[in-house]
Length: 317
Ligand code: FO1
Image (cartoon, rainbow, N blue to C red):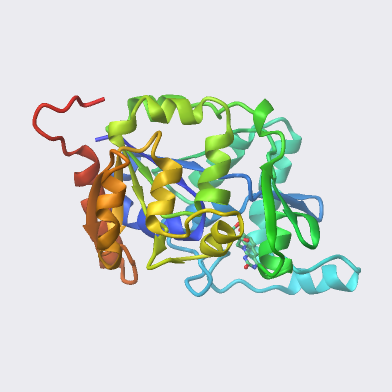
């Protein structure tokens, strides 16, 4: 069974860690958000692909969900001494990844090739694809001015009020090599429990991706990143409220309804099942909060069975 996942960073990685135990990892293609990418200290930082890579390689810092386990921050101390901004915590060993990626990009590699080189070096069998090769940073208009998403999240700790979001240059970007094929050829497409606005949103903003998903609607299953009106990870709920969306699982379902035929809802939100079914989505109600490794694997298996199950007389799309 070929599975394609759409993913952001930490929230998605938990489910993906279960996926690689639920199916042969070489059958999994992960299309990752690169709107979080930022250039710092002359280096191309690509947080979400790195988070997914480190998680699947079993080397991620378990306390934060990003960076390498046991990393130190001595280089950052020296950068701060030089007067450089040190709000984004780049670990000493993590810096090697950013240096390698940046060197590859400078010598003509695409982002797809650079990410693949990092994945292979960590021994991953799953394929990680960026949504596009172009630099498409997520920029927020806030009550404290215009800023990159990482400045909002890390430097300003989600304090500014978000007024609008844009993915700069997305309209001129193209899906990375293999992205449209991975969507067209998958038996199941899983939208991971990631922020719909700034993790899945940038992927959908790359021309052609949303249309490709619409063509596979019956095979697309999304796992809600909002449980009990609160995001499992990160500022999804806060951003959704500030931008006028319904900060509930059914609010996420509404954002995905045109391209997603199946929705996975947490047991605590079971009362929203009817509202989501009225959007012509099939609903699976289960425990979606993943703590132990066994939770991740169980949820991954349930999602895959749900995504590939068909009702009598239903076309496989
Ligand atoms: N998140 C933070 O909250 N603080 C940090 O200092 C930070 C550093 C960092 C370095 C490398 C990396 O790959 C990720 C890092 N993250 C950090 C996570 C990142 O900002 C976000 O979690 C993702 O972009 C959201 O998916």
